[in-house]
Image (cartoon, rainbow, N blue to C red; front, side, top):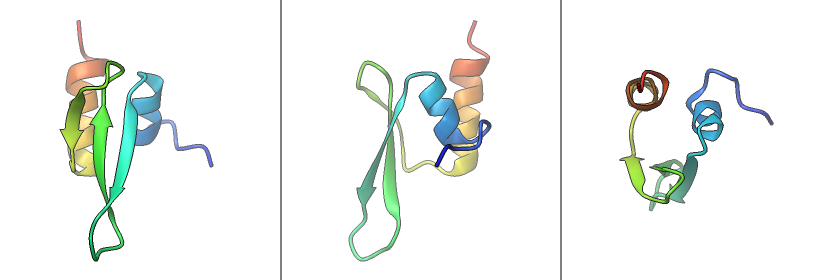
Length: 63
């Protein structure tokens, strides 16, 4: 399934970032780690809004 173009997943992919999903113990959710194209982690376990803020501040509005 293709992510919505304005979703964090689509935006990460557009800029060449990778989303890693690691299972949490005992819970049905995943821990998300966002990695830059060079492999360094830029965000860990951020909320949807925090991811969008980071993308806006560091990728979309970068000069």
